Image 1 (tube, rainbow, N blue to C red):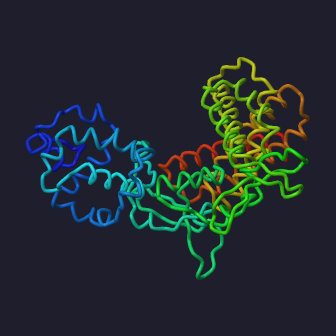
Image 2: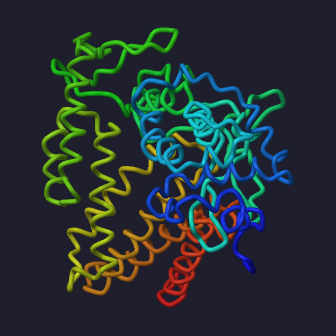
Length: 417
């Protein structure tokens, strides 16, 4: 068969080899099996089997994952069961495939994968076994970049000294401590006791802190030396909030977020309802603010507002501004997260001040001052993305920021610095 889009071994396997007997719409009906199927075919091909050996040698203790929920259940329903029912195990007899063997492969793929951008812009999973051996820290001191040839490059995000341990992060930095730890347990069977996880204030961000019921202060989670989370207590008046009370509140907010269904007014109502109970930087309030800012941006992009409303634009600037200090604190140094936050703030700020200037709400001097601020923001964001390859999502973002900076500089020349 003449095919220039797929590997010759794989084409022959499905057209005239052992895979000929398989149902041809297996991938259409079960898209989730693609990654594991690719690995199995690489293992079946004598020319590529050795390339996979390092991954296959990664030991997996299935009893750590066999909990009937989370990642195990997802793999069972979307990958393992469809593959076993397809008859693939029968046409790959040398691999001695069982449900447990497939589960182990799924775990190896997930725990050693990084997000990569294909040449056509699609987002894929790339397996980097050595890269995945980097120890975890919820405040990483490195940044990972993948070039156009899918070579992984690791850069220092902050100044490092000889002998320093280099860390990557395998969780969402905008989660609170209990949520990050839960994610790490599910995905990597890791109990994290990094400096952020042991700090009740989460490096001064208070992303898990609640408003004290007895005084103007905030209650923080008590954490023992082993990283075990306890109740929440106010350091000022010593008032107590039990862990059960906190979890009940967070469950209520989480449920309300799911029910919001992208409704701007509902999100604003949630902010009003739960704002007095949580620290302004609480991760759930940040989630609500992100949703509101995204809705306002989408409205602007779709031109759904015939006449842009300065009040809504100002609200977007405010929300983006609220997120920046937290992004800066949890991922210091060279940070994609902070760069994205700066970009969102930049777009909102420029759109607002351009409208204000057009409607004579700003003098030329005031407008130029805002443009200078925007220029500094754009320059900083581009600097944070300097290691990103051009074809990646971050590379495209850097191009977008560069275009915005050119427009800002043009207006600065026009109206004077």
